[in-house]
Image (cartoon, rainbow, N blue to C red):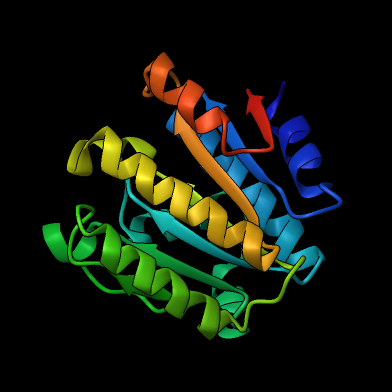
Length: 192
C-alpha cells in the first residue's frame, strides 16, 4: 500500500476507529502525517493532537512545513496541538502549539497533558484525532509492559469519547509479540 492509499483509507473511516500503521521509514511517516493533517484539519475541519516521542515539536513542525502543511494557521485556530516528549529532557526551543512533557518516561504526565490538550482543542466526538508517533521511544523509556498499559488506557479513552486514534511505528521497531498484543486493541492495521 502506498502512503497516499493509506492516507485515503484512514481519513475516510466512517466511524471513530483506532488504527496501527507500520511504515518502513521515518520520512514516509512524516509524509503520511502531513497528508493526513492536510486532509483532516484543513479540508474537513477536524482537530488533531499529536504525541511526539521521536523528535521535538519544533523539528517535527519544520518537517510538516516541508511537506506543504500550514501549521501556524491550524495552531492559531486551535485545530492542532502537539505533546512534545523530548524538548524538556534534551533541551531545545519551545514552540507555540506544543505542550511539553518532562521525559518520555513520564506516562502519567503524558496522559494528563493529553487530557489538557483535548480541552484546549475543544475536542468533539467524531471530529477529533490522536496520533502517536514514536512508539519505540516509549518502549525504550518505560519497558514493554508500561508502554502497553499506556496504549490500552489511551485506546479505551479514545473509544469512550468516540475519537479516532492513529498509532505509527517504523519498520521492524516492534517485536512480533508486542505487535500481536497491540493488534488486540486496534480496529485496523495498515502496512506501507
